[in-house]
Length: 78
Image 1 (cartoon, helix red, strand yellow):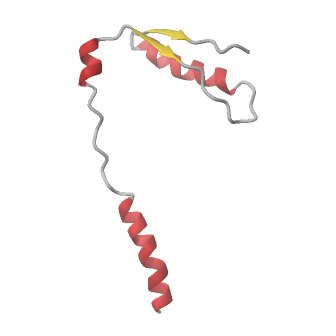
Image 2 (tube, helix red, strand yellow; image 1 turned 30 degrees about the vertical axis):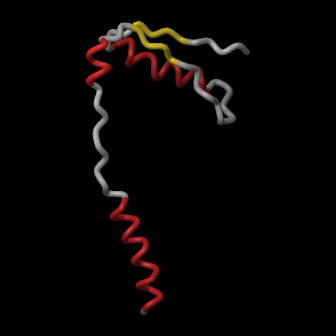
Image 3 (cartoon, one colour; image 1 turned 30 degrees about the horizontal axis):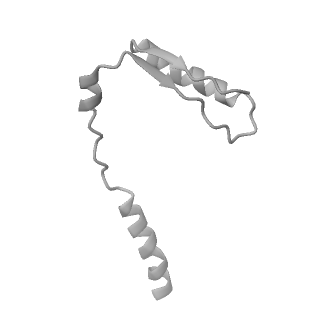
C-alpha cells in the first residue's frame, strides 16, 4: 500500500505542477515600434528530411506576409 502511494504521489504532484498558468508576454514595446519588415532566419535542420527548412520557411512566412509585414529571408550559404 505504501509503495503504491509513493508511486502515485509524485505523479500527482507532477500533474499539478504542469497546470501552473504562465504569465503573458508584454508586446507593448513591439507595438510601439511598429515594425514594417521582419527577417526570417533559416531554421536548423535536425531531421532526415532534406526539404524541411524550406517547408518551414514557407509555412512561417505566409502568415507574417498576410498580416502586412514585408518578410525577408536570410539565405544560408550552401
